[in-house]
Length: 145
Image (cartoon, rainbow, N blue to C red):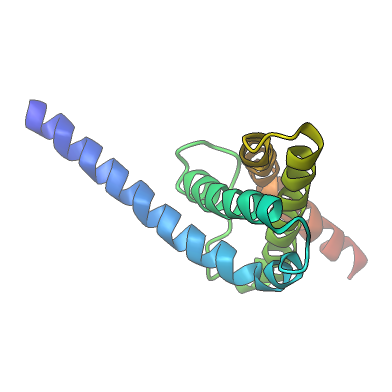
């Protein structure tokens, strides 16, 4: 009985890590243009701390939401081409925006930990909204065609 529970737990964690790995790949590739812009943002230390946090948290959040460990609605698969532009724009806004917001909070408050906390909390919340955003964009596209 105990080994069955352990095996199920290991399989669940393994599946989650698989989801996070592919989410990290997807988010990292789709936000490359935004990352280029962040290279020029200052102060470099604050931006890099918040940017790294935003990337890592985004990968974990997308993997968690897409794997339905936390339900936020139907997530598009990584290879779903019709939602690719929406996902790219949305991920870019989330990573870029939370990176800059976290860096600004870090500089304003003078402590590094808000440069981690702000992007982690805000990015997770915004990414939970992605299914609703994709649905809204699809409804608008059908209405205007």
